[in-house]
Image (cartoon, rainbow, N blue to C red; front, side, top):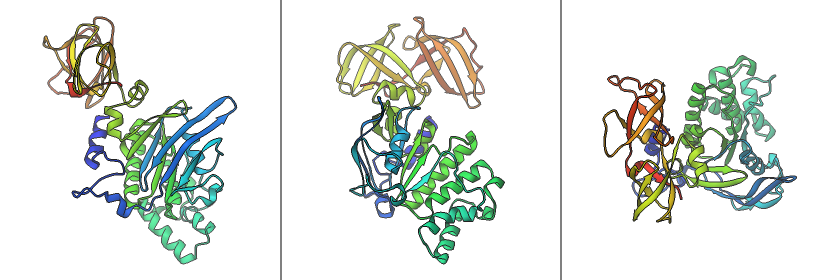
Length: 386
């Protein structure tokens, strides 16, 4: 997670709508062809179950927004409402300021990529990609040129004459994406398009989709339950839980400063520490956990007395084998070697679990269950939940 966020920070300054030039102007504004999407107080129910509970979200032209959440959170329902596959029970959806409630899906002009590739098995790659242009009545010259350009973008030119059955899963998904973008739509909707792929292939296509978005400038609404996908590709992430959006922010903000315990737990691995507030000065709190360990943390909370929940990400915890009065003693319960990373589960004297992720070091032995370590973290490495 930390590596993903470092890459994201290098690409963007965290502002909504993407990277900015030295003069402060939005570099996407000049190249974006995407539409704005306004989701206002949207409701969708199935009997007594509310799948979308008064959801509101504003998507900027050319923005990459990910709808992230567990199964049943409402993310796919919301995407289907935007696509027009389901009807609203309340609220409204506007594209470029115009309501689309009564516009059928095929007339909204959106590109759509499904979890299943949904390719025509009896058509070649070229024929599959050309299909949307044919349905739109494009002439032969335009169709051939646009298909050739799109196959080149998706690195599919050498597979143009193949049938889907002759291709790997990753290649088929690239064909599905090519078909969705061949008309250069202003909006592309993606419903968990990478979930059927293996990890290495999924990570590769994540980068391809991200680069494709930067090249075309379409607005992308992407649905996933995979936090890594959301952090890697998105300008902003909308986290959903039980039919509601609980936080909308940049990947860095979502990961470092989650708005709720749910977001803290769902996005990345986390340590949620119950602590007593000792003192508050500005945006820094001094706290004390059950062991009496005193530490500081960043805070935007209005609390200044009582108890608080503090988020400490596993990779932010430093460990030592040397006793230290300013560190928290813990006992190792398990240690797993993950290549460049060690994943350590430890426990405090009161039984509180602490997850630690640290870089493997050639001169450090793998901790064994029962070993005693000393854990510590800095104020900027932890966050008091609001």
